[in-house]
Image (tube, rainbow, N blue to C red):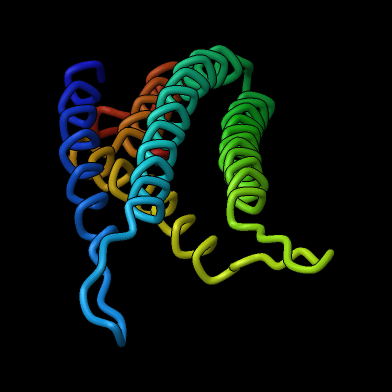
Length: 185
């Protein structure tokens, strides 16, 4: 996993520079201009989204490893109790992993939105105006960063699929199903 993340870090650095350059160069009615503020904030948001995705992948793998062990131990119980216990262990671990990873990403996105809201606020005659269009355009980098790293995880071997396969194989071997055996044998 560390080898994949090393390549991801190189990609993040390179692509953040590309995003900075492309977002900073704008075309308007007055012609071409450079908005380094928007480009820099979008690039930072991209990096934060990518790092959040890496953190989510790491946490997900740790949960999956522990869940696989618990699922295999639960499958040792006799009869239907083994099936039920192993299914419940795997199902609960998947639920915990899914909800916790979504919560992490939403908290980070909320913090970014609050920080950027203060940055894009302008006071005029006692009223505060917020440029929400620019705020959300800069926050779009977060999704791009998270999606790019998720794509690396998917292409790099399907982290979650491999974890699920290992858990299923362990459970099957513990209860005597697998290696070509059928359930009715």
